[in-house]
Image 1 (tube, rainbow, N blue to C red):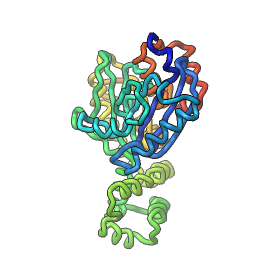
Image 2: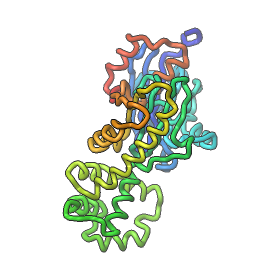
Image 3: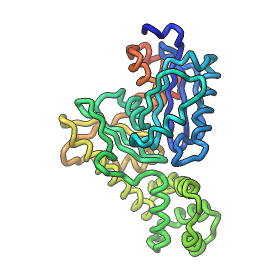
Image 4: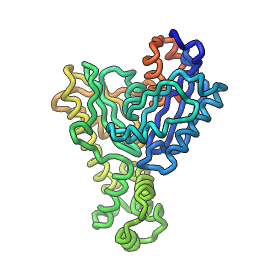
Length: 329
């Protein structure tokens, strides 16, 4: 740990499409602070930079430290999918006075680090956004995006899909509560008025429209559990797309058994967890072992920071992290 004598803490960030979560911890794994703000993705929120800067500054202040004492910042950023995204990602984390090394990666990478401790396996994220990441036996990182595959299972896709099915007339009596909930969400009374809203484009601003549709996801997954045929149809389509992505990446592993972990409100809903387990139980190539996440994505970012500094991830350090509720899942 040469050179760390004046550096007293690390920053780990999970920059998602809904929340920005920042942890500050000392070099022994003791969490000093936790801060949470709005979305980090410029594709989801025009105030992303404000949220990221605010979360970092708040965490540093809570920790009783100064920016120049930071040894590293590791940030997992939703929407960081290619080199062309690097300028806006860097811009989000360019906080005046923060001069430490920065590791900037996709949010799936820090989620994998936390959930599977960077061991070989597959990380599924489906919430505000959707991505599937494999870390193979030879430490190769492969995303479903790399194969031009996308599982349309993010919250907004469920909202759009159920809306189009309902407006097309594909609902029955089992969907009464679902339809009522959708209309209430939009402040409407009939499907006819919803159809008129659709013809007007719903909401002109894309970010606001996607957010509004994404907010329907808990209703849809909840009604699927209760027996809504329409909700189940939409959820089952999304489950199928996730399972295809998992099996697509699973084929890149040498062993017969592949570990899988999940993060995000959609994939961790009770309906999705049950259906994904059923879908993959009869995998045609591999056996998929679902694992509870060891740590949260923000804690996973901290773990990557310790590795980058050459600090061993001892059981004592891991135990120290486990003591803070924001490090769990």
